[in-house]
Length: 130
Image (cartoon, rainbow, N blue to C red):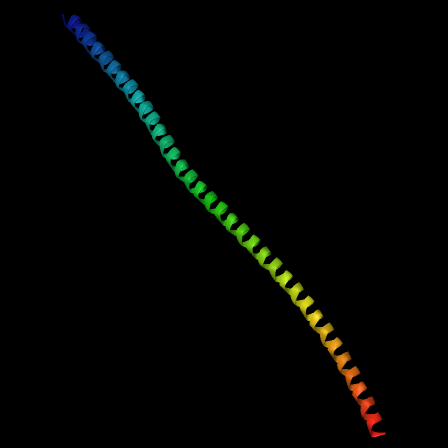
């Protein structure tokens, strides 16, 4: 009788042990699946966070690019304006030089005429005194 009871007890313990092992394996499998799912969710979350950061960086880059384009346009405008001012100044300087040359020529002509007139008056005075 004792052997039969021991065999029955061993059978019960063995089946309980196998059930416990099966429960442990099911729990382990579920835990692994949960970890995999959590890992996937974390990766998706990280990918979304990276995408958001990338979008912000892209927007900032576009803003900087637009600012650079604006600065280039401002520079081109200022350069064109400066070139125009230089051209006008150069033309004005050329006109001033031409005006000064004409005034110098006129002054030389007036001086020559004044010298001729003075020489003529000296001659007349010399004739009158003689």
